[in-house]
Length: 230
Image (cartoon, rainbow, N blue to C red; front, side, top):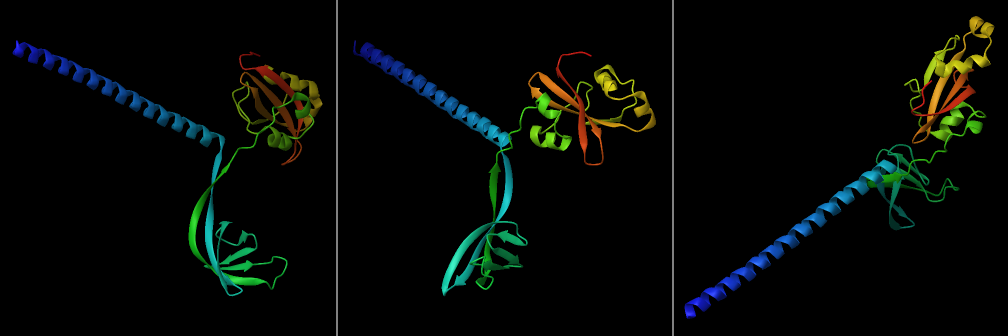
């Protein structure tokens, strides 16, 4: 009888121990899953942050100088050559520090005691969405400043430049409405084809006529969806 009770007690204890082990294992797996998810989430957040920001490395210089009998330490951010900004100029490992930039005589000579680097995060500029009326009123250079990066046109080319001779592909055929045959037969007309993405499924292509090396003026445009065929 005692032996049977001992066996029963042992079985109960073994069963409880098994339940505890399984529970602990499940907790461990959940903890690892949360940890891995957090790591992935952090990586995605980091990637998004890197994509949406530009990192610029700038040099930091820790300076030391004496002013009015007192030792002063300061740090400036900028180039390692020439003007460091804030009235600080470098010459070798020495620096000239204008305490009062308006007074050329109020100057001390200091030294660089430590160099370092600083990551400066700059969010990319937000560009405007191309607008047909607006784009026809400004030059190519102004448009690039306003609308940013260009993309491929319906022709599958980006920022294409060609000599207009008439008889262009159907995508460009309306350009013929702006030039008489005697114009493109007797002079060289250079056209630059530039395209911007308006949204995820629509583009605008603008044709600019070259006036000189720096000036391109708009002559015509076309707005179309990505799946349109000409």
